[in-house]
Amino acid sequence: MDTKEIGKVKCPYCGKEGDFTFWKVINTSLEPALKAGVRDGSAFLFHCPHCGEETYVDYSLLYHQPEDKILINCADTDRGENEVNRILAGAKADPMLAGIDQSAYLTRMVASRSELMEKLAIFDAGLDDRLIELCKLIGAAQYMKDRPDNSSVTVQFFLSKDGQKCLRLFEDDAHASTMVLHDELYQQVRRTFASGLPSMRSDIPVIDQNWAVQVMKLLD
Image (cartoon, rainbow, N blue to C red):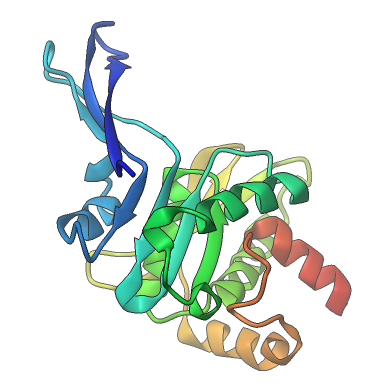
């Protein structure tokens, strides 16, 4: 199976097309340079050969980090349960994964480049993405206190250049604030919720803000 293909991308600046490498499967043991390329976004960066401008390209891929038993399917989907299961079943049936014990893998599904990069930042920091999603929900609630309820707030985890754990908040899709995620909050969330959560390696591949809302409702 080919792990990549060359396709055309239309530059949003000059309107001309150029070649771009679309990765179908990224296996970090076979393509170690792409381990950093996914994290810094360069694996998604299109350099226009005509005008020299750069733009990011979102596309679906299967990210396989065998040394840490991490498998993340990045697919643009409405995330309906049947659709998620169909896509993951197809990903797990990939010949590139033949012969490995997938039950031992940490399997996740994300819908965008930014979500893939966020998951990897969480796992690189040795953190539990279930707890991070709950921390993000608490951060959003703190931010929305005394603010209009009709605003739409999303939160993204990231590591600063000096390795500090942070949350970036977006209000109505515009960057609104950044806050430090203190270890005290993370440990408090762990003490409060960890015993009632499904296993990290359970068959719940989509761990996101909607998942965290449902967990809060069930534990309320």
